[in-house]
Amino acid sequence: MIRRGSDFDESDVRIRPSRRGSRPRSKDRPSHDDALPGFVIGVDRGRYTVLVRAGVGGRTLPERTVIAMRARELGRKGIVVGDDVGLVGDTSGSPDALARIVKLSPRRSVLRRTADDTDPVERVIVANPDQLVIVSALANPEPRPRLIDRCLVAAYAAGLDPLLVLTKADLRDPTDFLANYAPLNVPFIVTSTAGDGFDGLEALQDKLIGRVSVFVGHSGVGKSTLVNGLVPEAHRAIGNVNVVTGRGRHTSSSAVALRLPGDQGWVIDTPGVRSFGLAHVDLDHVIEHFPDLEPGTEQCPRGCSHDEEECGLDAWVESGRAGPAGASRLESLRRLLRARSGEAAD
Ligand code: GDP
Ligand code: ZN
Image (cartoon, rainbow, N blue to C red; front, side):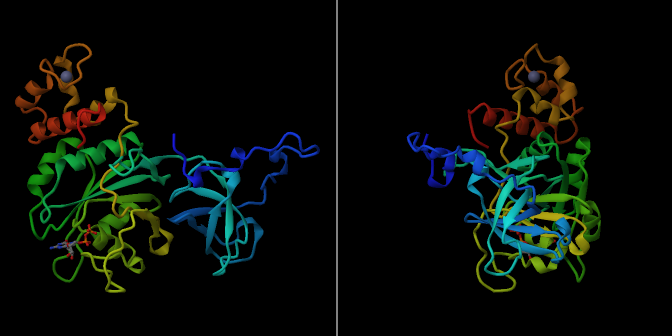
């Protein structure tokens, strides 16, 4: 296994046994009982932006963002946006201050990025989200049902509530699309920026209150437009142009957490992330995330993979009982099963 330099920590450094009197390194480590709690809102080249709430630990400093690095004693544990951490060192938040992250709280949930050609490992990109907001345009670009299905499975598998946001309702009536998704009982919001308002934005705000919501959607669906509507000071680049600098959109693919006005919740934007990894999803359980198809498995032979000739799902779909999107949903399911069994990537 090839390990990058940054993956080494002090446990890799041999302490020469001949040096008498040297104590084991672990005893040198302070317990960091005084570590200040913080919430990771950004990660950039080994530097973490951490929000520290006011008044924590009896200190009088106001709420601030602190730049921090990872302490070596954390070993190889990765830290991502959404992590709850403990900080020591200079936590003043002044421009040249650098704190150290010495603690990482256990995660309640995680989202993993899909493996790709440049990095075959699914890596955790967001910690502790509550909700996955799947953004799809009704037109321009056309909805991609397979990608939506994949995101829905990722949400259920990670224990997150899914929320479908259908943008650009001014370009196409959502009725047909929603009829296809009705059997799934997935909550949805329809939005449109036509005219002077932003239809659907308030309904979306309501769904985000008090929660950490990860937004995902492929390029052009209007995700940045939504995020700017929700968090105006975020200045996310729209249509490839940054609204503040006028320059091209940055291509960073790291997630960033943006606070909703009035501290009502968090939006985590995931630029460049098209979908979420499913390698950890148990194949036998994928069908459970297709509630429109699952009853049809009663006609399947024992141990059916649902991707074989004898599978009962084809007849179930033909009977119409899976709803109008049955055939496309079955195709989604089989593509997911094949992608998971290594036959083909989606
Ligand atoms: P992103 O790539 O998903 O972040 O998409 P953007 O927010 O950059 O939007 C892509 C394009 O769609 C931009 O030209 C937006 O102005 C446009 N757009 C966003 N929302 C709507 C909408 O509701 N209706 C229409 N007609 N265009 C929209
Ligand atoms: Zn089957």
